[in-house]
Image 1 (cartoon, rainbow, N blue to C red):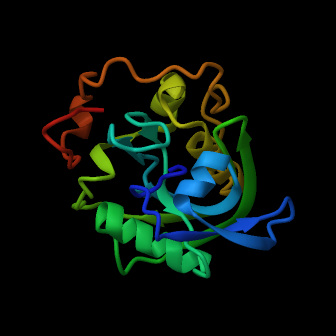
Image 2 (image 1 turned 120 degrees about the vertical axis):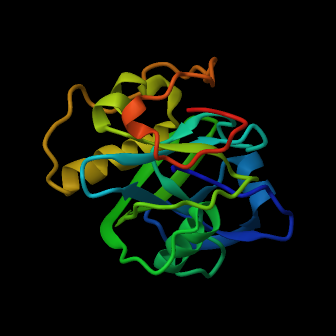
Amino acid sequence: MSEQEQNISTDEWVDIVNEDNEVIAQASRQQMRAQVLRHRASYIVVHDGMGNILVQRRTETKDFYPGWLDATAGGVVQSGENILDSARREAEEELGIAGVPFAEHGQFYFEEENKCRVWGALFSCVSHGPFALQEEEIDAVRWMTPEEITARCDEFTPDSLKALSLWMTRNNEKEHGKPLTREAAAPVADASVSEDPKNDAVVSSPKDAI
């Protein structure tokens, strides 16, 4: 959710943009990652309308923060692709979400030295599942409250935290504890944290737990 991406393919092209989010070139996903080129991505806050956010654990095969938690769905926008169409495509591919309204919440810029430079388009949708997880992308999902996400913010991809924080602000949500920030960049060490009993209905992969 963050800057979620499918497995790199040398024949998949993305638009490269400047500091004003204007297209200036095209590059393969592999080249974009290797050279940390500025590009576009969609970020989708999936929530249940009752204060819970759908969180996913990224697979260990991802080339961007493998094994980390994501507070959003979404992914890199393909060259020439409409950004809303990209968000809908990613939600269906990753989670099986289709045919639901998407709310648009504007754009934002995120940069992390030597990792990514991205113009993000922020969306949200309400869904209660069941979810069909894309095995190449997602190991497991579960519902978490903003407070729970804040308490474990060091385990989340930083761009997805920024997207979620902006959504909460722009959606006029009440404040939930400390800001959603990540001071230290440490990979998730334990993928077997016990589940909260109130979240038992969440669909997840048996090979991992969030």
